[in-house]
View 1 (cartoon, rainbow, N blue to C red):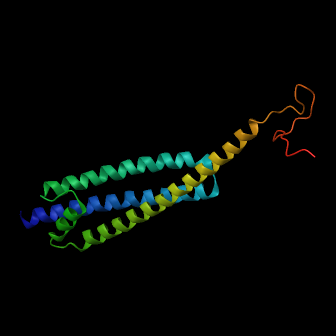
View 2: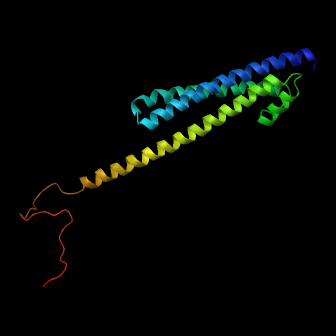
Length: 164
């Protein structure tokens, strides 16, 4: 491999890492917005953000695949270790290393915030299930004040505790 083709590969790799980083930053912004909406209970505005987040994830995956293809074409595995080896082989790896570090930090922030969001969704789901259970339990009680025999209806039924 000539030094000129390495420079082209370095430029291509750096551009892909930059694109991947920008996608990850946009994803982080959406995940943080999702967190705000979940924390505020603003369910009405949540769906459009979730849809944007899903589109951004697809965009990030496509960019990652392009970078992985470049790694493979250069003879490196499409893993993080392969990427690190690919960067280490560059004549001037500083910019690519910096981009990779920023990308890793941003991805970790996305994962952490998304995990918190998942717990918030789970808590809201559990709260809703409990509330629904309470409402359904109340609906199972008869609404009549008196039985068909004309005696007062009691919610807990009648039972004899003892006779004197």
